[in-house]
View (cartoon, rainbow, N blue to C red):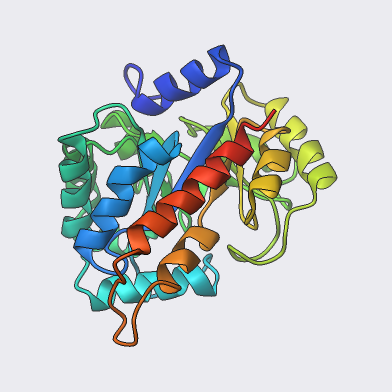
Length: 276
């Protein structure tokens, strides 16, 4: 565990006390450009995001579907870097010191940046947690344990194929929350089935006191509500980055209404999560 409470710990405790579920909004840093991306991220808390998950653009995002892959490519083509992503978090923290931020991505860019340096600079920028999808528990010394020592939560993915024999390894050094991948496959593909998800969320909860948040395949306020009703929250990403793509002009530049449209969609999804 990290030393002391992180913003994630505090936010999930607040939500539990209010009998609410978490709406976790995913966007890709720098998509379609730094200014537009920063405006989206800045507006997400008011739109209802309880946690912001920011994708670190990478050339080979193997766990992501076409929409998030495309967003990563747009960001890289616009010049987004790991340094730039940390700077975006730093800028966000100038006006919001409460909303938890989780960086999601792949280990390759962090490895080349330097894991210890990355942890130190991420913490200083105001990052609360990391999701690094291609680092299994067997590689905890690479980044997970340095992150925990550095005061960051390390959030692990559990999947429909994570059986009871494997689950303790997955949960061993996990903190902040457990991210349950509701479907086998890539992001934004099939819609999750509530009954199957409910059974697996209950199984994970029998092994841990951490909040369990469900992502992959959630596209509508109704789906977000269904999933959040059986878990501690819902992650929505692909449909938000698709909304970015839908509001680009012929040159791939942001249309004037892009930010407003993405934030409106986020607010509808947030309302779905906590619909009574």
